[in-house]
Image (cartoon, rainbow, N blue to C red; front, side, top):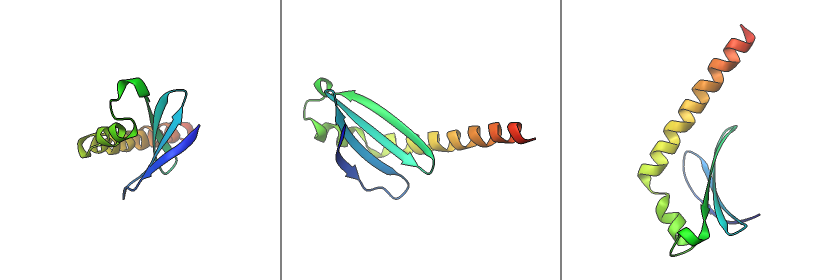
Length: 82
């Protein structure tokens, strides 16, 4: 697995990796991570197509999902400790 691109973003770290004829989009925020595997054969323009998929609407839902992940973790941690 190798990193082929990193995209700047003010809220989270976005890395694009390549492994076994797949692009793996890894998005990190703090201790949380989301990853998406996209087969190379599904994309017409290679990694440039990945950049197009990562539009503002998609990243907005990623941000909301991170908020849900954080909330879920905090609730589980609270149940564990109290």
